[in-house]
Length: 180
Image (tube, rainbow, N blue to C red):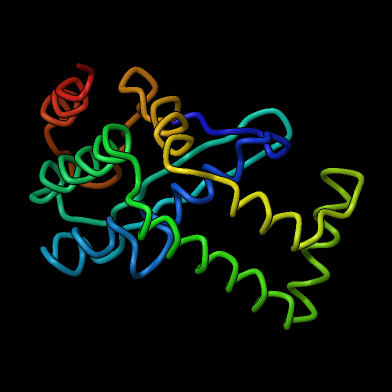
């Protein structure tokens, strides 16, 4: 789906949604699709932010036989965030995880310099780790629901498959199911 540009004030909401949805081994998609059901070897989400646009992507490496079920599970998770948001406990856990990752990144000189360089090149200013963490901490559940509603509108979804053909009509029907 279309995402946000890198200078959007709402980018921190997207970071939180991404981390919860498919940002690591404890993410919803990884736990449900890979660990619980064994339907995909790899499943994750990511947000790519550019100067004037962005892209929020969910990736799943699965077999054609599992494509429909994996797509259904992805759609269920997107819909769950849109309808229910994120429970406070899960939101706090992901905020703490992101904060920890930021602090760990400060220990690596290359990572630290890359962050500083990107900040200067993209924003013409240094965005401190404290500023990022403050913005992450400020996000609440109602803001997550609002952002998810903006991101995950069925009319914005695009599905791409690579490999042996699977039934595109079935995948399209799954997306339409969530338009209501």
